[in-house]
Image 1 (tube, rainbow, N blue to C red):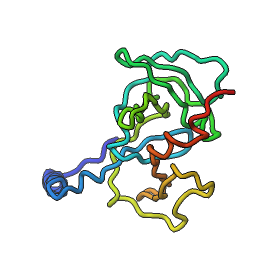
Image 2: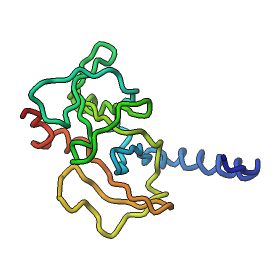
Image 3: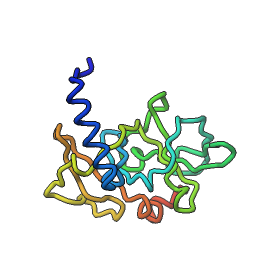
Image 4: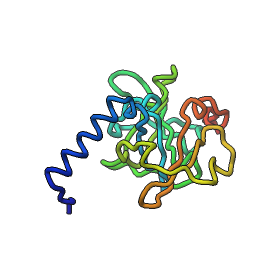
Length: 172
């Protein structure tokens, strides 16, 4: 059930959001996505367009995490199942699944298949964790954060992911 708030509380929250937007703090908003059991944060500039999962065409002789090709308004996108790429479970193809057209801003027709999108998050609402970056040292894994519910979030550096040799090597 939704939390009920008073009109005064709503107005105060609205004023605070408008004030922060006027100061440019809204530019620090990040898109939250769930991939497998992991929570990721993407800069809005890098997140590109978010679309519902269309029909994918499989590509033979590719790694299992390469989900196939999608036709989005007449443009073909290579689709990577981000959870499977990370060594996790395959993302279910259901109504919650989304494609993040992350490569368009970087000159690549690449999309990430994620379990679902979780809306916008602001850095002000997150706490940087002491362990910092991920243990595997992948250059596309950014800082780690913890939210008020003690959930762990990792920042995804899209540009570094799109140039990572292991990400580009889709062939068997």
